[in-house]
Image (cartoon, rainbow, N blue to C red; front, side, top):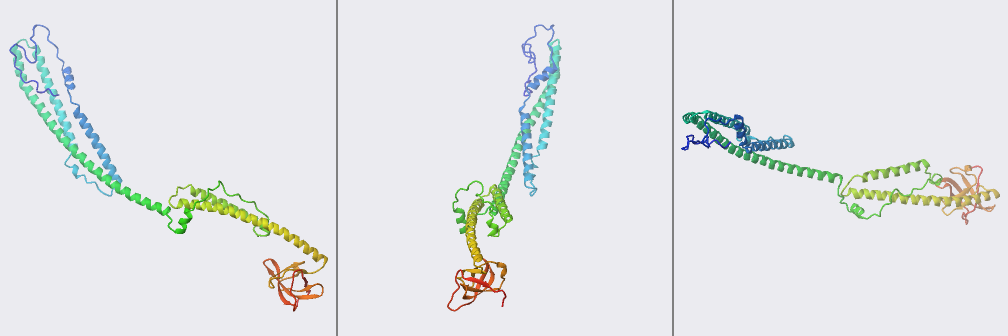
Length: 406
């Protein structure tokens, strides 16, 4: 490794020494030094240049990495475009690597042959008894050593030239990979922009911006903070059945609807809506709770009012019942202000039907007029059929139902 040109002259020096024997032999009959071929090879291995191996290994890593990147690029394009690799045809990296390995092998074998020839010559020189024999030995191996040195030098020169070509091709490969990387980046940027636009369109589709003036005003109005839970709900009241004709089963169903509505709103609020949808859900929840609270207060107040008025009506009904028992009459006029919708009190409602007529008296013998009964929203009502001239039906006038209808 790098010492193939060291032997340039194999002729003996004037002082009787040679380049192989740096010092004169003082005891020619003594035991000659031993030369080991293994030790010579070991020394030769120490001079190996590992930079070339690192260069080849680095190139292989770069080549594999570039191949993986190209494969990934092809896959991400979903095979829509075929990658042109004609630019790699002139590089022929596999052939260059194979030739580099072959040249390296030939160089190692040539160096081994050179080392073996030197070792053999040195062994024979050590065993030579005189200078003439040594001269003949040097002459014998001189031409072979020179040819082997030229062979090693030639192979080294070829390998160096091949390394230069290899470096050039590596640069070409890196340039091609760089171009494909740029192409890949351009394609990825285009795909990114395309999908970002699609995502934005999808977001606006399901999370629109409300542009209507009325809706924007509703969403911009600030709501007071909502209390936790739903508004206080009142218990069912019996007046709903007796006066509002709203059964307890219907009331229970309405309560369940309110609960279900709150459950749906709470679940929707867990979704990270944006734009106008998020404040719209807040408004819906606010309106739902606020309307529920106000409705509860309204119907609760109405139920209480109905209960009070029902109690008052009960007192009046008791008074009319007492009056009809002490002064037996069919009934009394209550409110005659509207002649077509006169409120009456009848002791026995089942005595009349639609179209039944009755006489109206004030005192026992003062005839006022005649009325006809019909079923109204407030129960049995009456309308004026005829009125005595100069007289007008008034409250507490007595009603006399005729036993037989005309």
